[in-house]
Length: 393
Image 1: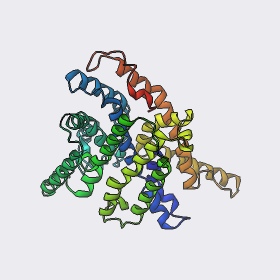
Image 2 (image 1 turned 90 degrees about the vertical axis):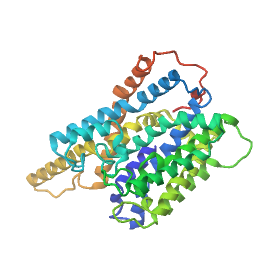
Image 3 (image 1 turned 90 degrees about the horizontal axis):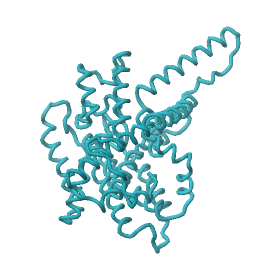
Image 4 (image 1 turned 180 degrees about the vertical axis):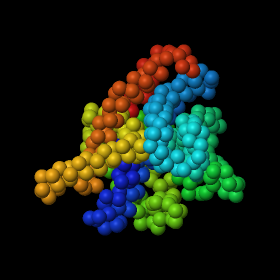
């Protein structure tokens, strides 16, 4: 459901016509779906791999194979489609005016674009978060090694954040396409700035692995975490928007709230879902909601950008056609495609249908095929005792 929060944040402008501006600001901070995703990733990777972690070549190959199967195929296909769309239409929202689209496409499909302020929102703009995600995937084995062998878990996010600060201090004076060029970019759009969120998820998994899913206290973690999440949203909504940015999260207080407070609230919420019987848990475990959750990665990739542009143009053409019919019939009726809010609802439904279809026909089969293939390492039967089976991803 985190992808739906991001969807709302990107189209929050529809609330500005009939509601006070603070309502738009509030919904504009629903980018928190990304934070939820980062904490969840930290938790799931740790829960699945931490106990059976062995930093050997075969272990790493199998680990990398699983990560590629889950993330890369749909991202690669949709990114290539985005650049094909650019070559056909010339839509500069894909390249942001950069004169070398082939090089930019390579930077996108290799995730390198996420380190450059000039390129982070090219291609599939929201795909910047996958650069952050991939950095965590590659870092996770090292994080586990340092935590288990040297008992230095809590020091790691501090070191990574300091590294981010040093990089900005160095490269803010170097004009190289915005590589680590400013603090808001590095703190909000790179792994080194966002690492604390992953570490919170990692620590949550370590707690669950140590204590299990049962607890004696009756604290309402689910609802406490849920309320605190939206308290953080409200704090960010009241922050001044820095010049050149779009939301309160880009302000200093917004960065602190988003990167260091919100993730703790998310972890409380997740811990409640894992250990409490609540309406949230019942709702999220419904088969239809689980299907939407599985296809939400695709929804996240297509809800903004070239595919939405195609749909939006199609809606505008339909609206013009409807009004041409009204003129021919000499009537003054309301068009079903006249209102932005209603059109956005149409887009939400259709994008979900597309997401589920692509998940069933492409993503899921490719995921299974890669996992069962000899890519990187010869396929081995899955360990039936893997604890990750206890959690439905």
